[in-house]
Amino acid sequence: MELLRGEIALASGAAADAAPLLLAAARRLEPLDLALARETYLSACGAAMFAGPAGADDLLRVGRAVTALPPPTGDPRAVDMLLDGLALLITEGRRAAAPRLLQAAGAFAGDGASIEESLRWGWMATAAGNALWDDDGLRAVCRRQIEVAREAGALEQLPIYLIALATATARSGDFAAASSLVAKYRTLAGGMPAAIAALARAAAGPPPTLSSRSTFDCAAARPTSSWRAVARSPSSSISPITATRLAAAPSRESTSKAWRVAVGLAL
Image (cartoon, rainbow, N blue to C red; front, side):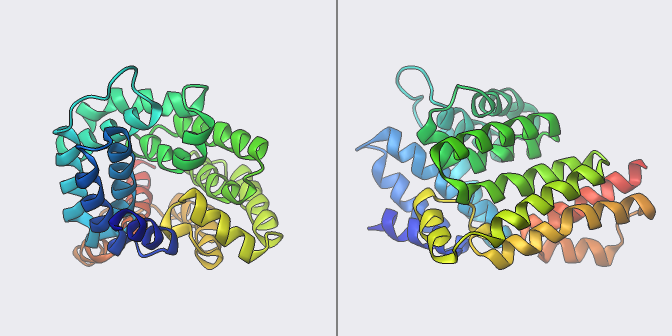
């Protein structure tokens, strides 16, 4: 019951509500089905990340629970690599997590992830590149997942990767290419029946902050304009007011702001 309630909450965009439900479900599943428990922990991790500050405690609980799990039997799946890498990122930091995250990103960028894993977890594989500032790896994951989604007819997933590609491309300074990707997103999103898209998103389990078209549109408006602003007028420091706002902001927004400030400092 907790697993079903958590998946419904995640698909509907209530990430803060979904995280503790999925965490509890994963713990119950550990002695019954370790593979399913690991998948449920990954769902809980995704929900906690997208919940922002409200999910911080749950995120730490997920990381600690996963690092305490026995290793998967047989060869690890792509989803196992991703889960273990994120757990190490949460509990021990980037240096410890980097090898596993790079391995997971490589699996989702190539043939190391099954079609089922790609359709269900590909959106979370982009976290590996973002965590390591590996835009080349992020783009490789997105291109592979776009290919898989097209071949599977899962066109409702394409906007997730187009926006991720646009953001990574904008970070590199290629605003023309980033704008082209945003235009492709808008064309695709504009022609997608809302009811069909909502059903498909619920089945696939996409990131909760991208569970509505209005959120997609907000994300699509940011990549090029935000990074162009950084290029024109880089910040010299993060003011106390900005730091306070970042601490209170949702995770995606605060991370985006921090990236822009950091790039501005480097320009």
